Length: 503
Image (cartoon, rainbow, N blue to C red; front, side, top):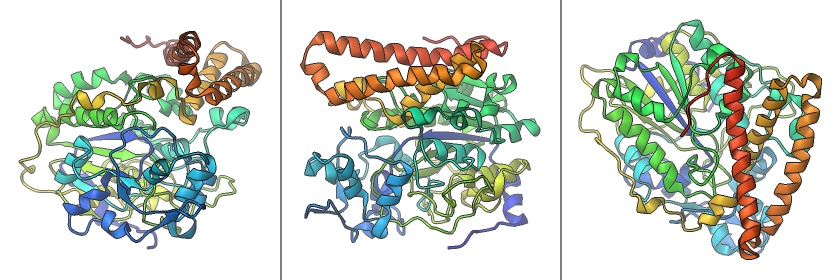
C-alpha cells in the first residue's frame, strides 16, 4: 500500500469531532499478535492469530515453531530488538524471530523459544482484552521504524528520530548526538504555539526529556508525577489538559512499562487505572480519546510483514533510508466515540501526530507526519456518546505477584541503562562541567558498564552465592535509580522550578 494523503475532509472531521482531550499511554515492547491477536475470535475481519497460523519460524537447529498460546507472565530472557536484530527478524517473510533469539541466547530452552511465538489467550489480559473487545483495535499500526525504544518514541512525539535507529550502546552511547542533538521541534512545541494545554505524567524519570526542547522551563513546568493524574481526572473536565502523555514506571520492582522480565500484569493495572480514572468522570469521558499504544514489538513475533514504502521524515543523514516501517504493535483507540471493531487503516506513530495537527491546526512535524493517515478516520461523530462502555476494569492483586521476584529486582535493560547515562550527563551539565561533561559521563559509564557486565555474568549466582553479595548489588541498583530520579528534580530547580514531591 502506498502512502495515504488525506485532504480537507479528514482535517475537517478532526476539527469537528467531539474529542477535546487526547491521552497517549505509551507502553513498551510487545507485538500485536502476542497481545491482541486472539481478539480475532471476537471481531470478524481482525488480522490476528488465525491469519498467522501458516507462518513458521525455525531455530536453526531443526526445530520449528508456530503461533501458540502462552500464559507466561514473565519472560526471563529479554528478546533483542535493536535495529540490526529487527532486520534479521524480518528476513524470510518474518521468519527470523526465533533464530535471532537463539543467536543471542544459545542456551535457551525450547519453551523459551516458543514464547517468542506465543500469544495470550482471549481475556487473559484483563485490561487490553476488555478494551479490545469494547473499542477500536487498529490492526495495521506499525512502529515507525524497525528498531528499539528511543527512536520510535522520538517519532511518536516529533515525527522523526533525526536519523537515529538504535539505542545507546556502552561507551558509544556517549557520543554527544544522543544527548545534545535531539533538537527537533515536537508535538509539545506545536501545542505551545497554539496555546493548547498539555501535561506529561510520569513515575520515576521521563524519557521524553531526551528531546532537548523539553528541558526548557516553559515545558518542564508541565511535568507531573502520575499520582497527580488521578486528581486532575477527578476535577473539572474543562480544566483537564488538551493533550497528555503518560510515561510508565521504568525502574524498580514496581516497573509497569511492560518491558520483560517484569510481570505483564503490572502494565495491565496501569492501563486499567488510566482508563478507570477517565471513565469515572462522565464529562471528561465524553470528550476524551485514550490511545493505548506500544512503542515497538520487543523482539516478539508478529505475522504481518511491515510495509517498505513509508515516507522518510526528513533529510538527516543516515545509513537507513526510513522507507521500512517497524513491526506491528498493539494499539487501541478508547472513547465513547470509537466503535467496538477493528480499523484496518495503515498507521504508524505519526498517525496520532497527524490527527492532532488536523484537530488543532498545528504546525508541521516533518514529511512522514504530513503523509500519514490520521487516526481521525476511526473516530465517530454523532448526537450522543456511545453508552454501555465498561464502568471499571479490575486487575486482581493476586495476579500482580511475580513468579520470579528476583528477576524484577536484578535485571536492567538498555532503556534503563541509557536513562541512567543520560541522568549522569544532566548532572555533569548542571554542574557547569561544560566541555568536560562528556568526559565525566564516559568515566561513569565505563565504571557502570563494567559492573553491569560482571553482575550479568553472575546471573542468579548473586542470589545463590550469598545474601551479602545480592544485598550489595540490590542496594547499588536502588541507589542508581534514586540518583537518576534526582536528576529530574535537579533540572527543574536549575530552571527556577520547584522539585516534585515524591513519596
